[in-house]
Each structure stands twice: as C-alpha cells, then as structure tokens.
Length: 34
Image (cartoon, rainbow, N blue to C red):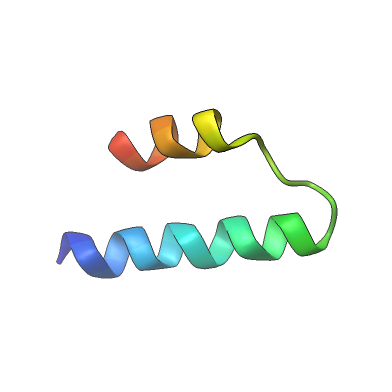
C-alpha cells in the first residue's frame, strides 16, 4: 500500500518540477517520510 502512496507523491513532485514549482530535495524527502 505505501508503495502506491509514495509513487503518487513522486508523480506529483515530478509534475510540480515540470511547472517550475519544485521543492528542494531535502523537503521532498521529509514529505515522503511523513
């Protein structure tokens, strides 16, 4: 189950990066750990 959730978060992060709304890697990792 968690694999699917992490995959969705990664997809969202990738979409944000494409729009120039990306967050730095450390912030992304912290969000994934939540």
